[in-house]
Length: 485
Image 1: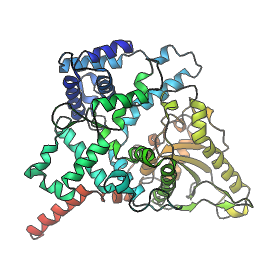
Image 2 (image 1 turned 60 degrees about the vertical axis):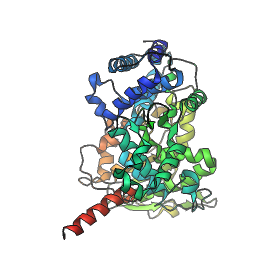
Image 3 (image 1 turned 90 degrees about the vertical axis):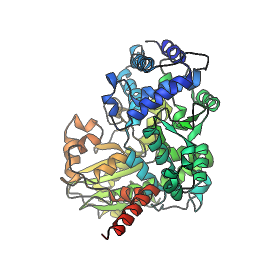
């Protein structure tokens, strides 16, 4: 199926008829992997997102109505789109295909609880080690128009409404008696001003953003480009209130990644630097949850005051050298462009070298590292703010620096899961994974599945700072008091 045929099929229908069908379908299959239960497994969030994007960018109102059968046909055409892989003559064609496919699909599969809880846990509950340039008192109101707690609470409210109301949020609902408790937590004026500023877009602005986001004219790569619905997940002008074509994208707007893009647009590189400092400290907080482990911050050594990896973790089984990189895959990786190798080395290459240098200093008995034991294996862990989905696989690992110790790249969500394992020592799991030639090339989460996990206290504290958590707790307290409990 050629991309032009697919686009023409989407354009056959009025956006005002097709978009509500997409939104309702997205709301119906909004839970993690619930699309597996959809008809013919066609209703994936990435397919729905692209159909919505094409309709908003290319559709017009002088077309036909749309039915559920029409939407199913469109989604079926999406699945059958001709793939760049079929004409790719690059010797790394398989690796390039994996980069595109993972960027297209796996970004919709990150756990919402962790994404949202991490926003407060990192941005308001973690202390950085350097003087902030942007993230100073008052930054939340200046950037978001309200506190971070309320901002995430508004995202949760919009998301819940989209799921329960066929993909729609109607502002008039805030005036009803059923919304009194909601507006007691966050005033309706705040909800509306934040929603309009950060979450809502109209068709004209969407088309402009879509044109600016285009990175290639190749129709085989079009669907892998940035979708402006990631920046503004609600659209107006298509029925009452706001429509969420893909409800999965609403909470993502309030995740650290969503806030990162909002902050960079407002403050520039200074926001990136502040966020990087907080992220490094946040990783240290997560490592501190490991039982029976000693966590040491970076070591400054030598005349030139050089620095080791960001964190050194000592367990009974191994020494884990942790380097933190507050980076995220760029469009060169999402589209697997000719610059993909240079780009991944730019973002991660130094981390591999830093781990190897630190391992050598420990092994040589360098005086500043005397407290780090040398009687056990040494492994490296590179923690990124966003997942680099196939970076450990043979299709990409050889493109990065070679090391003398095993090194794994993992996302922060994987680390948050790793530190809560309660039925086996984490060091042993890492050693077993590294010893397996095949499993060591998988994402770290594969080695964590099937194990018992405890609660992550850092994430729980972040989640508990949001308004609806407080409201629920207050209601439970009132009900308990009323019954004499």
